[in-house]
Image (cartoon, rainbow, N blue to C red; front, side, top):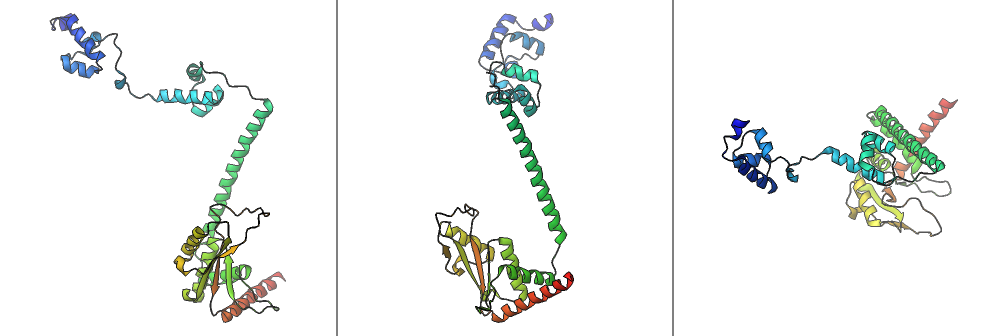
Amino acid sequence: MTSEVSRYADFEALQKQAVALRREGLSLRQIRDRLQVYNNDLLHRLVKGEPPPSWTKRPNARDDLRDRARELRLQGMTYDQIQVELGCSKSSISLWARDLPKPERRDPAEQAKLAARKRWDHELSMRDATRRRTKDEAALEVGTLSDRELFLLGVGLYWAEGAKDKPYSRREKVIFVNSDTDVIRTYLAWLDLLGVTRERLRFRVMIHESADVTAAERYWADVAGIDTTLLSKTTLKKHNPKTVRKNVGETYRGCLVISVLQCAELYRRIEGWWRGIASDALVRLR
């Protein structure tokens, strides 16, 4: 080392320059290049005792962990809870948060309620996952519908949800009302299968007057694949302030009414088709 130092005329003078550069905020590499000192041991001796500038410090993930631990402690979590949340040692947590006030001890009954609530939330989450999995698996079981399957499905769908002729009121009209978009699209696909052209269809929205009528009209026009100008005048249901409605909010869009023009013959055939299905089902029950 003596031979290395002797290469420089005055070590103390060199040290003063290095310290001054360090205090200006230069890194070791910058000081090395500025003074042309390429011996790392000598370079460190020249700036010994001088802290490195803050900009040269690399981000420390542990600092983020410490800050998060302190934040959780201030929220009232115990060391054990913080350890589970962050996955670090309890000794580190204690060191980081020892200056913070201890959380108030909860009443045992309250703690039991919180634990039960947490278990129930987990149980509900598991049940939801099971529901979704069952529904997804069932959807795959259906596969591609044949024309006959869609035909029979449509007949049953209409007879469950569509307008029907009554002995005391002869109205052989094909009118279908529903609020489910998938049901509406399935019904339209059925009409296409029957050869009912879109020119014979009339669309109308039915909705409570307190809802966003314009948004509902745009929504149903999009579902039906038509322009809003082709919708008939919307039917507004009067709002009864004494009635507590649950079909409110952004997801409430009322119903879409689909009517078929020149439909008496079609209605009679639908009723006949349904009778055929019901008769066969009755035979199976015997």
